[in-house]
Length: 466
Ligand SMILES: Nc1ncnc2c1ncn2[C@@H]1O[C@H](COP(=O)(O)OP(=O)(O)OP(=O)(O)O)[C@@H](O)[C@H]1O
Ligand SMILES: [Mg+2]
Image (cartoon, rainbow, N blue to C red; front, side, top):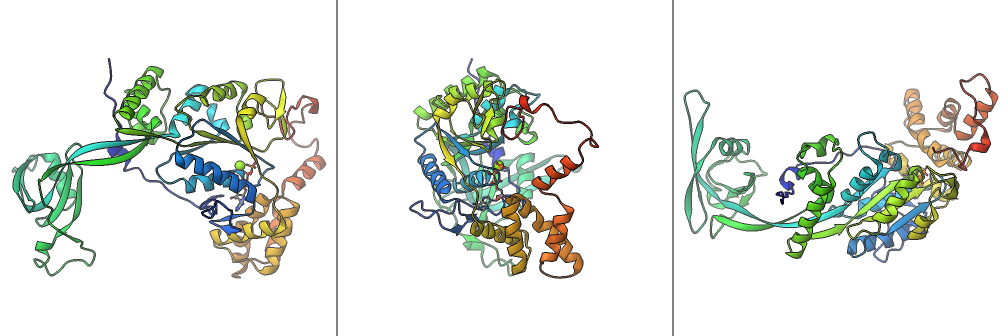
């Protein structure tokens, strides 16, 4: 039996995204020009020209929407901008193309199997652009009459609406009256009512009524009274991901699961039904598939089962572009005894195009620090900038970036507007970087709880990942 497959877009459109100042909030794109050449310092991006250009090429490929199922690996030492470049790609893709970002360890969840988690991530990265004809009522409100019963429990009403060619009276139910009241619809407003969802949109006030009131806000928009029929069919286009269609149609969860994030496993038979339905829509010209991007950060944390699942999934017709990032050198493949470059099995590496990122030069580091200072609204004296740049080169870029906000607190405590070398020096003493922390651990040997495991057993070049 074929279930009714819905897309639930009217609810989804209400979803808004919240932004905060985070480690990558200064990144607003890849900073490439029209010829895909990287600009020296643009959209928050500095240096790393080759990798950015490569990312730009891939972006072009995604935007053209023709190629699916490719794997890309970004490999390079820590804090060389792998995650930053992925964020830049996400920003440049446009709102229509889905971009999903997961950390590989998210796959190991208690509520679902590894392969289900990966499938959901893949489904999130495939967009379906759906053309729907919806029936609307559009016109200028002539009169809105509402009668309340004595108790106020029931309301009845009549809405008279017109276009330049006709006029009609509609009976109103409780729900519609509430919706009209919420939108503060008055006679003289030009409105659109979506018949399926009952959603009311106010387009503005009719020109004919522009002289009725003196006291009108400056933001009042005047529009022409529409012409033609009051009831019309209109084509609307919206994009949802396959995962959203899956969740909305899984009876046990309902669309609220999208907000709670607690989607559980989705039955494979439901997925099959949806894929068939989407296939039908495609043939009828009602829907279009948009392969997006799935970014798997710290990909060496996946295990051998996930890797072989990915190998197969990449060959699927409905597959997004999968970008992976890893900072490991030769490392053990999780779940096996074998070592392999980047901790990835060679058959997956063979399918992947590899982009490498390199440590930054002094000039780039200085510019990244300046960009971060602007983002965090911190002023550095020229001497402090020079010191922080040297620190970044001797410790790590991340350590230096982390000192910006802490040093700023010290500077504010001193009552000065700009961070100086003195604040940085104090922060440097308060907070250890990686090298000094290792050194400190060596000095403290024995006094801390637990001792090291036999180094021979460690499969990774940086740390044990299993
Ligand atoms: N080219 C760049 N332009 C501007 N900011 C950058 C650039 N590269 C890195 N950054 C910033 O430096 C910090 C560290 O970079 P990022 O987190 O991308 O490193 P990574 O390669 O993902 O490291 P890891 O392997 O440890 O995950 C971030 O705050 C990032 O936004
Ligand atoms: Mg990273």
